[in-house]
Amino acid sequence: MNMRQTALSRQLAAWLALGTLVGGPTAVAAESPLRINGFLSAVGSQMNIPSSYGYTQEISDKLSFQPGSVLGMQFGYQIDKQSSFNAQLISRGVEDWNVNTEWAYFKYNINHNLSFKAGRQRTPYFYFSEAQEVGFSYPWVLPPIERYTNELSAYDGLAIRQAWSGNWAGNVEFLFGSGIRAKGQGNEEFDSRTKRIAGVVANLYKGFWTYRASVIKGTFVPELDASSEDAEMMAMVSLNKALAQTTSGPITDGTRVVTTDLAANFDNKRWFMLAEIGSVDYDKGVFSDDTVGMLTVGLHMHRLSPYVLLTRGRTNSEGNVRRNDLIAQLNGASGVTESDLTLIRSYTLEENSFSAGVRYDLQSNVDCKFQVTRVTGLNHTNGYFNDTPERGNALIGLFSLDAMF
Amino acid sequence: MNHYMKSIMASLLLGAASWANADIAVIVNPAYAVSAAAPDEISKLFLTKADSVGGGGHLTPVDQPEGNALRDAFYLKVCSKDPAQLNAYWSRLIFTGQGQPWKIIDGGDAAIVDFVSKSPEAVGYVSATAVNAKVKVIATFPE
Image 1: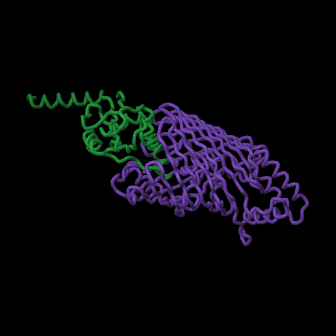
Image 2: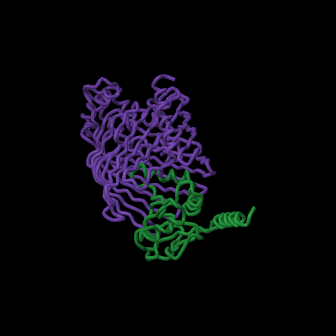
Image 3: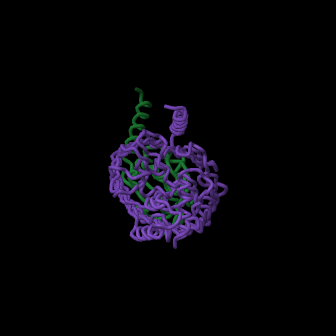
């Protein structure tokens, strides 16, 4: 164990001890206007082929504790009966444990059912997007990589929510703003902005079921650094120059993107299920239009919750046509390299996975999870690997310790 | 064992037995317009999915302390969640800024009955044997 891992182990141990001592999420006095909550996940991973895979390409054939490992602290201050301020600080293993303000916003309740939030907020692209890093909140070790890779982002703006009660209770939220995503988040090699975000998210509750639908659109603008000597950035800069010769234009001009999602969740004493299908559609450029479907089914058996997870991700036919058209336009064009064309081809998603795992609740606020995932269906594409696996599949072992306090 | 000690022991045993078999009563202030609520409505209320029942006005739940046996029984019976599942559910609300756990009332059933009797928008759950005329029962669940 090197010094960095030792420091990490100490940090995790200290946070876990704190969480265990504090005892649970309701430990902070309910009367106090200040609320402090925290969460942590220590995630270990290893796969059976010499490649890298995942959200930030950190899952490799070496045992690693960085991917997905995260510490979070949340502060809420109730200013008066109607208004509050909330902020969340996050420290991630993949970012060398630097502390970032993940979101911070002011919330005002106009009445019991109508509220608005202003400030930096998580973009609610998919069912678990907002809680993507809170390992204790979901059954898996990590949310399905095929769906929850590209969406780790926040936006600065306004959200207005209207809720209602009744047989079909629910809420609908409208959001407006401008999004940010830092390099390294969401498997990207560059910083980016999503401008002019507008979206709507609706939830319906009936019995043991929750139904969710969302549509969020914006203009995605990668921010490339032409002076960078980083190999991946240089490749993107080269690709951007090549694309300037096409009808699509350079990616730095921006691309309209629409993200849609439908999800159904069932959870009773015995069974839980989450079915979700979501798509991301760009109007031009190289980025992959894809649709990912996933299905999780599991059992509640006292402290044990075994589950299986199936995912299937594909680039849509429209995306394939657009990509092939770009390649045709660039074939033989001046200054276009084979690397540029290879990079364009890499923006293709063909990936299936099957996972089986188990969650064990050590305490009411601490769990441990084990999961084995087999990735298949790559069809000579990269999927979420950094290169095309020769054998066309991979086996990944994951485990985690999650706590909230 | 003298007569006094026997009486205490008998009272304790009787109390324990009555609690163990007691129904769980969901109580509101008598001024609340609605007199009965379905189990699904109560579940939604305590899981923040709704804030009223039967078309009545706004309600804000209050909770028994964590680790309380009645609390565990209530959430398992009404919301189908054991303590860890309940915390997992809340974690998704807390860490996305969508909610905070309900105000906890220490002091047992009597304190919750007292709080609800003085708070027009409060809703709580207690052992049915603790209910008195100062509150209104809108749902009962067998223990």
